[in-house]
Every structure is written in structure tokens, then in C-alpha cells.
Length: 334
Image (cartoon, rainbow, N blue to C red; front, side, top):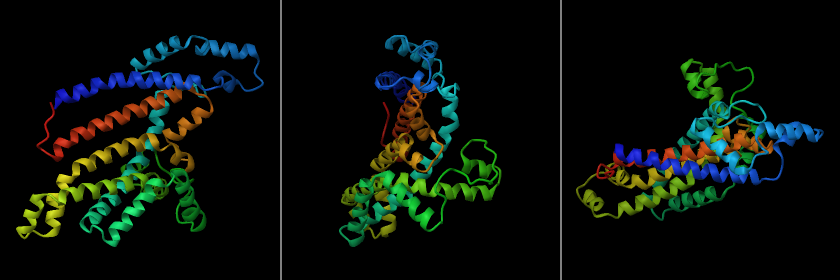
């Protein structure tokens, strides 16, 4: 196990180099001048050239990439063009918000998707099976931006049940410790803030978790149907075991490998794919921060943010692979 983990971590190095190179080239091929963006349209040519020289933008692309990669090896992702703060500090402040949103969205997706898939598989070709798979197909096909806007319109504007944006209402007091507000409110036993934070999480979590929910439900149904056809399941039924025992102890445990794979992959996708959701709901996470950085031509922020998401995705995949042995002891890592 240890040697396998070390090999996977070493394999992360070429991934980081490749992602860094691709992102660097794509960002620098986008039309526009970040120095012009910073100084404004009325800036003089001399001022723009001076700023470009101070930022190293006058250097050839390969020199700029070498400088960027040298900083990356030392844990330095550069400084934001707009705020002049270290990019790593900016990411560390905003990533907890994205992590909190992604985690809640995944709880919603798993909590609804797996039971729906199990029930559909155990009632194959029934009305619920057909209806759930139709809903899952609609969920996969539904654009997040449209669903988010519809949720805001219905539950925030028309019904007024839930807040439409942000993480915390104005006037609600809460000290930021981990910047994961649910955790912070629990640590401080501030239940008023906990309810407020939870109410702000509902709409964006549902919008972000709908597509993973549909995928997880379909995968659970497919995997369960395959396992339920096995001989040992028929043997378990012939012994007089109850349906609940056969389904949850024997079938689900053996069907869980592809399910956990999908859950892990979807969680990695959520971490990097919350951009639209965060933009629609004005969620101050890393996704919205990257969108703002793209508009302002903030190269270091965009490069560092995308690279951070790539590393997080690879680490999530590694954790999923390691979890296989805990689910199925027959699996060995060599």
C-alpha cells in the first residue's frame, strides 16, 4: 500500500508540469494586455511598458514559464496582478467556501442518488424505476445556470423561503476560524449562525448536486442490477434471508466499487466545476474568484487556481483508489 501511494504521488509530478504548461500557454494566448487592464484605458504608453517590465511580461514566453515553474517548486504561485497579494494566500482564503459547497452538494447527491438507484434496481421495470431514470436523464441534461436561476426565482423570489445568494446574512455574527462556516458555527455553538449558513447552502447545493445525483443514481441502479443476477444472491434468497439483508449486506457491498468510483470522480469534478454555481449565487469561493481573475486578465491567479484544482482532482482520485481495499479486502495494491 505504501509503495503504491508513493508511486501515485510521484506520478503527480508530470501531471503538474503538463497542466502548468498547458494553462500557461492558453492564458498567454488570450488577447489583451494585463498591464493595460490594471492601469486603465487612459494610461500612457510609458506607464504600460514600465509595468510590463516590472511584471516580466516583456520576457519571452519560455522565460516567463521557467520563472513561474521555479516559483511553483518553492510553493510560490506568484502574486495577484490586481491585489498584489500572494496567490496561494488568496486561494487558501477562498477554497474553504468551495469545499463546503462541494461537500454539501455531494451529501445531497449521495443521500438521494444511492437510495433511488437501489430502489429502482430492486423494483426493475416498475413505475418508480422508469420515472426515476427519466428524472435522472433530465437531471444530467439540465444546465446548472438555468437550474440555479429557476431555484432562485421560485424559492427566493416567489416563495421567499430561502436566501438567494452569499454565505451569511448581514447582521449575523460569526467569527471565521476555518472559513468553513458550518464548522465555525458548531465550534462556537452559534446555532443561529448555523441555521443561517445552512439556509444559504441549500439552493446552491441542490443546483450543484443535481447532475452528480443523476449520475450516481444511474450507476447505482446499473451496478445493483448486475450484482442481483449473481448466483450467490439467489443462494441467499433460497436460504430464506430477508430482502433487506440480501440487498444491503450482500448485494450493495459488492456493487459499491463502481459507485464509490463515480462518487469520487464527481466530487473531484464538483471542486473544479463550481464556477457557474458560485457565479450565479454570488458564492465567494475559488470558482467565482477565477472568473473574476479571467475578466481582469490576472494571469497568476488563473494559473495558480487551475493548477490547484488539478492537484485536488488527482488527490481525490488517489483517495478513491485507496478506499477500494477498505470496501473489498480481495483487492491488493502492488
